[in-house]
Length: 251
Figure: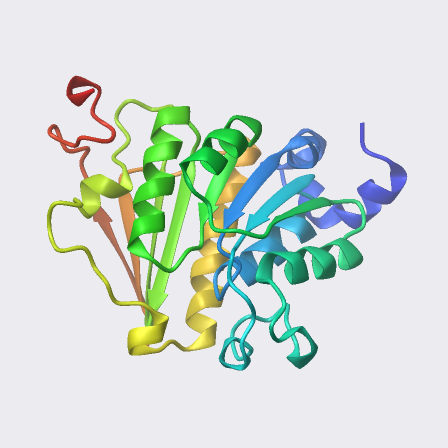
């Protein structure tokens, strides 16, 4: 049951047929891990907390720098040199007291993945390096936890949803096999414009809310944003038969 306060706070969401009271309760009961509290993790964590997701684990081992501020909208100059996860958790907890926010102030490794993934309903990959992407993709496949991947550089962004509970779902490794030259570009090497991150993080948050409220989410679909041309493109992916991560025949 929702309290009167919750009914009022989330009234605009509850009035949607595809959310309703049941969906709002599902959001309140949900636990989500956000990996990376940078340009994507900032808006994504705000949107999920604001939507009423009950528990957020936010993980990042980096500290805040001056160059982060144009796009990492939770932080101010007062936060420079603080850990990103700690600073974000404090701000989110202050703004959304009903939400439980736990900071994981170190880089996720396999041990931490094995600890947190059995506790959560889904993971948002908001990281900015390929090794972390491979790690969380493999861990989510192993633990059968849905994974919502976002990435952005320059004026471009991409979003992909992986659902290992569905045997037909391709994974991140299917899209970018580790044996090939992995895409090494990130914000530090080629730059980024803030609103592109907000759009990709918004897409990640929307997929998360749909998934948590039992609405259909498109798997095997890579969404590409061209921010300069104001265009979205969708590409259909296939689970790779020889994928060493997600194909059961390869285990």
